[in-house]
Image 1 (spheres, rainbow, N blue to C red):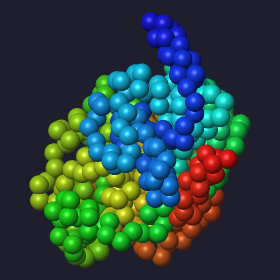
Image 2 (tube, one colour; image 1 turned 180 degrees about the vertical axis):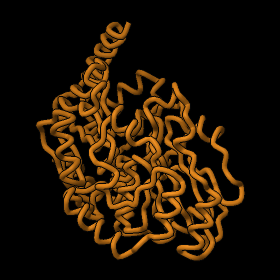
Image 3 (cartoon, rainbow, N blue to C red; image 1 turned 60 degrees about the horizontal axis):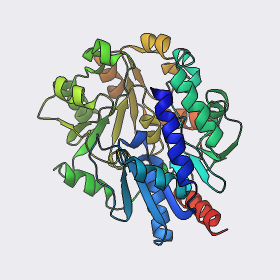
Length: 385
């Protein structure tokens, strides 16, 4: 059945290749399930530089979200329009693997930004059981074959592209567009986030953003996310002073399940999973808490206190594989709530900042604060030439 579908898609693509290329950029992230990540910031910068360029977003309407009105909203379900926009765009931008039936024509330029830079968990062919998954392998082969450039923000990520992706083409270590606002800051974002959540301006924020588990859909073991939020809030007040609110952002793959099942204190915890922009949340955050998600590395760019809480590290390491032991990271690591509370109570700012410096040096991190501008300029130059 899949072969028949792919053959039909091939024929549709071939037909639309008869149409001329246009000064148009087509982008998406997370297979169309959200508007955001690196492509969002590239498109918005392109619009600022040249409003005449047509911008399109491929939208899987299983999820509802808002797209700026200057970007055309292209539903996955409208196949003919979907394929037409892809086949006639001079530039594609994506953050994930590409389905095998996609075909690039002469004159098109494909930018793969990926979606996680520095990270703990292994990805792609570094994951043992991915090697046996034909669909993953075919999508990865298609992606590396089509890509003209992969965007990187660290030597660590560049090595992953070479080894886990098997990519032999151009890697541009220019930084991640989504992290530009974390490097530069942006006036009004903190106020915007707090107003959206009805949080007083003088209240401090801890953001808890854990990763998904590959086995979670079967096991539904909620204990791995069982942070003692009440004690956590009390400890934050004791260690750092002020008034605190804890924001929780679940991974989109299991957000619906976790939002319903995890019991939270109405007094100190707020579920912000549906807030559209993760980087804006990080910019408004005073302390970060995660387990294996790459978002904790994004938060560390701001050099705010970051802590890890992971009750299942050995299982996770055995199942998926990791690039680091938790103790290798600059973030104080807790296996349970007692250790988390102790880590916050005993947090030493000077020691933490030195450990961050060592880690950034070790991984070859580069965040320029103007990655979106640099990539947008490259796209405009390509189109005009």
